[in-house]
Image (cartoon, rainbow, N blue to C red; front, side, top):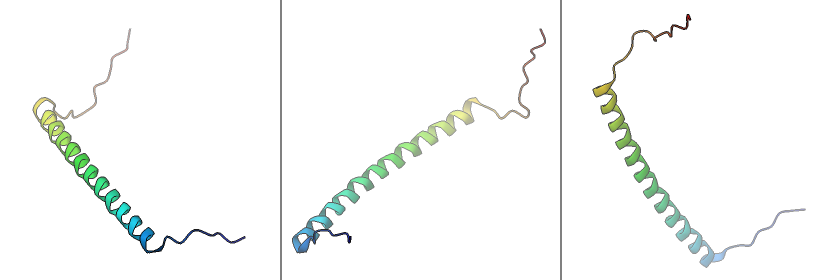
Length: 66
């Protein structure tokens, strides 16, 4: 059997368009906040690594000869 759905009409189309505009605005704002927070975290992490850590040439081996 064929699938059917209700036609939204002019008013329905206007409501759907408005809904998507609001949704995209909220999601876009969240994305900007998230990108800002992640970017700030990465800057702090990079500064910490540069200040307190150094790259090891070879991994340290544990001596378990007891």
